[in-house]
Amino acid sequence: MQIPIFTVDAFTNRPFSGNPAAVCLLENGLDEDLHQKIATEMNLSETAFIRKLHPGDDFTKSSCFGLRWFTPASEVPLCGHATLASAAVLFHIQKNTNSVITFVTLSGELKARQVENHIVLDLPLYVTYPQALQDVEELIKAAVGDMTVQDLRYSPDTKKLLVRLSDAYERSVLEEMQVSAQRFLSAENTGKVKGLILTLKGNSSGKDKGHDFYSRYFAPWFGVLEDPVTGSAHAVLSSYWSEQLGKKEMLAFQCSRRGGELKISLRSDGRVDIAGQIAIVLKGYLTF
Image 1 (cartoon, rainbow, N blue to C red):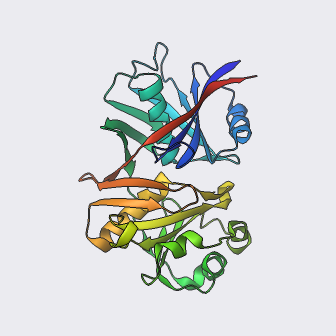
Image 2 (image 1 turned 120 degrees about the vertical axis):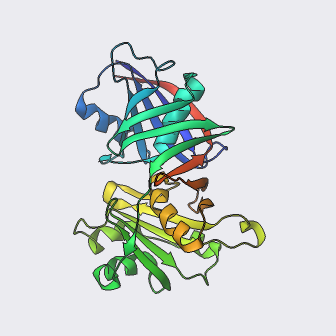
Image 3 (image 1 turned 180 degrees about the vertical axis):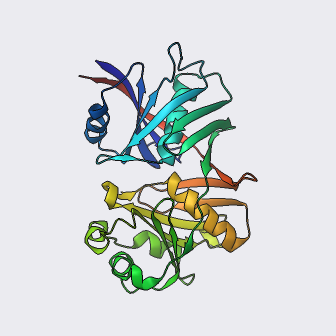
């Protein structure tokens, strides 16, 4: 069996930065267990599988496809960067002729469109609620030690915990933090939290000019210690920072070692447009 496979760096225009995702084009059905085996073999934070929904569908001409995402450990309900990567494969490699591509996913229908040199994803927007420190104190201590936490929020829809560090900290502090995400698993094993976001308000001076906020994202519960650039985390961050800053258009930077930039626009229909650039770094075939 041969399956076309691609590696795409998402939320960057430079190879070997941003967040890499593997993308498989499924001409035919694939045994259920093979999805996970392939994702484990690829060993990237996400492997995406694009499938045809009807006989006669075509990767170049059709406008609607099925899409699933797997980490090396399990299937996940939403992945922004692998959706961006999937749209890039269809638009740039398959030369798909549609202006908008719709993906049918575990998180409902997600749309992707090209705008100049970006691909724009239409994603759900997830609200956050105040979270009492005592319920997650051990996890917070494992994540940030004795650093000052300014705000604590929880997104029940995504099971993500948002930890806002004090505005007194600079971007470099967030970038240089040594986070042992493996320790999160013993600190939080109730199933309440499946992803931890560290975030910091942007600084309008110096090299940071223009970024409204910064973040890092950790999901050891899904086998991903730190994710380089995370669309799904920004579906949570967007609602929080829009409320805090009173803005609907924002520019965000995820401060992982690889780093990546996301353009955010809150929509009038209660969803969010997240735009990013891509770099395609590998084209080939899985053979088995």
